Image 1 (spheres, one colour):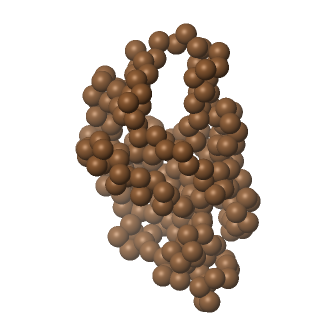
Image 2 (tube, rainbow, N blue to C red):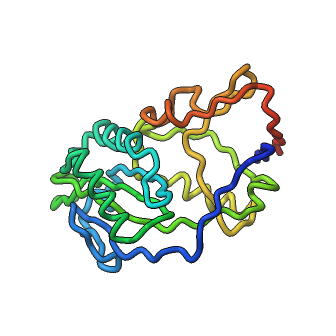
Length: 231
């Protein structure tokens, strides 16, 4: 386990109450959230074949949207999935979903699946989804007292593509709850720490989702007063 804390951290406080999600978009069509679904022969269900991305919405605006679209389209290319919508069309649909839900603070999940397969194996036309999410804030104590991380050596099958296969993270979730009982947990994908270097970076290995690496890579001076305690 790893305990870390940095002085002067700023936490984001989300307004309450959280809006109720009413609409998603499936293949470009705005759909009631209660009725949104895919058929059981979708390859995302049968074979785990698909990609996704996830980003925050603040004050009604999607954050770093161009960077996330870069990564989403790059993941689709790496996984040989043909996105049936243009970049402009996807961007417009994201804004439409945000507006339909009156989403001021929350998140958007993009999902591209292998599509329906009558023989349960052969990809056809992919399904693409824009899903809206409420976003619950982390407890204030996480920013004041720090948090614990359960470390594991693991490399994704396709580390440069953001695939939907999170089986390892879900399996480790059970183990982490036994060792660190808590109501909420999260995964920390793509974090690679090199504490012995003069400058350390969470992306120093190059095995993270590359299109966002330039925008969101943590680079801190070695004398930064972080507190590291490894148990």
